[in-house]
Length: 525
Ligand code: PMP
Image (cartoon, rainbow, N blue to C red; front, side, top):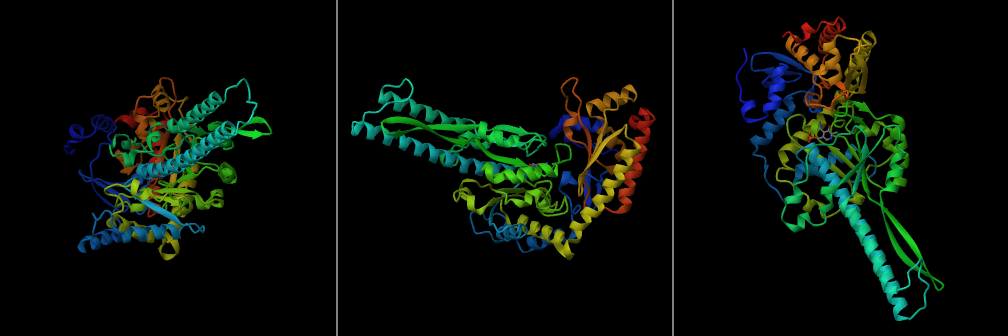
């Protein structure tokens, strides 16, 4: 029995239509542990895990109790602009797990995108202030030079075809101003190809209060530059190429020499250790090691986006600590998703104390951020991951290892259908091939990337297993372009061997259907 609902009328009509065509339009009315429950009575094993949120499973009883206790005690949720002790406790805990000798100031927010936004905004402010300071210094040097030469009547030989001191000064002044504005107009943020960091645009642009807006105008015209996974050294070139170059005169004997000061427009580099939305792609260890080795020399801050990889998903609180990146003390770390234990919406931006801008805590706030209720639940979620000698974190690697090796075995059995299996911890991707040697139906679906959704539909309909592919596979792509068809496997740490076996049995059934070109069976339901 399908229960009527009004999602189509009042929320997302197109998505509703697509979900309904794929029979994925379920209404989940209850969630517990590794299961979701539909309004028509189905119990579904959840291998999506809220796209990485529910490492602790749904509605963990300890978290519910914590939330209930907080509410029973009438926790102060809306006490903005006060000294918020639970957020401070959470911030302290997040610091304890870093253990690199640095102190991080933690800016809390309500979502992943917001915590990335805070990191970018802070990095922009720090970089902008630096560029402005240098521009002002260069302007002072230019003025001092001009007044000295003019006042003291020094006879100087100007460079190039310049022969008038005032023109010379004005030209340099204008040139330097243009350079300064070029940073303001197009600051750059560098990232890795395939990265994903959120979807919001900047509402600050339409915030009237000048104190909040002033100085951040350039944020709305950020340029991005992406680096290949196997060419991290390109980052060095980018930092060098995308720069403002200021000119200033130096008097050497009677001659005027033009010296330059170069400041990169690249204000930060942002990355995930394992790209989630980009197709479950672990960044190669060699790349991480090269990035770590050039970090100090680059002199630009690194934002390690641990929104999906952190808080347990890869078996630790901060995944970068298990990689070569642990050699550096990242300037920024962003967290969200599992931080809230799957129960509360919370994001955190950790900003290294030595670069922290003291005004930031006033300039960058949000109504719902930093509430004691979310902080209490997040503290409990972290404690659950760490309790009994990090039993759950260890389990992530054990269950993840089983899943990965079983899926790799399937890949070997069906190499024409499964292109690649990859991932770490409980963040695993199964990439399907474009199915060139299959029937026209499978070739078409394979090419468009829709196949993964058909597989998801089958698993849900016949096996009560929830697995999904990125939603973008459902949008119209560029004609002729192959779309990646990838299934993301991100169950909770509590996933059992039996549940993993259920997935493998069901998945094998679908692979057999595709192997035998039996498209009817895949779409018949
Ligand atoms: N960064 C990463 C690495 C993510 O995976 C996501 C969400 N998938 C985000 C940022 C954005 O988080 P949110 O959806 O909560 O805005």
